Image (cartoon, rainbow, N blue to C red; front, side):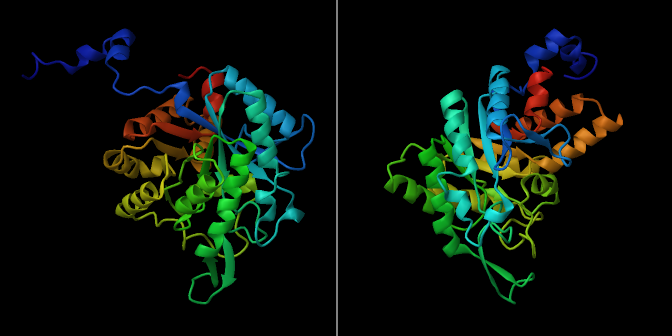
Length: 333
């Protein structure tokens, strides 16, 4: 059939019709909010993050109160990042797996005071004196003159995940991109009785320019070199399937593609290939770019929901996004 018998606009004539035929929906439960807890903030303190308009680093008290407000507005899950004292950082990221660490404290309080699903980011970069996601040594075979030691780092990454599980995390999310880290974490968790703590692996994490606002927020930029020897090349998509397959074999419970918007093709490829829940990380640069355009008047807030909807349409089940408060409090869903 063709025009005039077939008229596609019949299904667009008013909002009620458009609503009942919409193929993809964005729901509050789809959103995961990344929150920053900073070690040296106290009481009700919070500090603005210049690279992320409208976002803050929180003290334990102020962050928990904000999490409660988000939960009241319909948020179901949150992912926790920590910002330790600069003087406490060392070569092996020891503040990262300390029971008294800011992330461990935040997890305990979130589990005590909310019903949110608590996810913890598992990585070493914010806690190492050199800013890399693993242990390092000098090696001229690498472009930067630094080799990030894969196997030696796994022990410490697993220690971080275990400390988060002991604090009460529902899900641990390794973001380091070391080979074998999912298996190392699963083995360590199981040996310590945490069989039911899930692993949300940053499976296909690209060496992206869109992370810069986050690195400023978390004070986690590498002091020398870059992360291209362990994060993925932006030109590769088939490699993402191999990364995800290995994580599935090692025992992950969720897969993730990061960033989201520049990699929607990869989100779709992973969705078509695997049956696990799929997360897409709508990263800081994506947030900052759209927020800057809204502040300048170049875009309206409709760009927020449209961009998030595109991530869902590509195949993501869950979206980690700094837009969560904006969407929830302004009832953009």
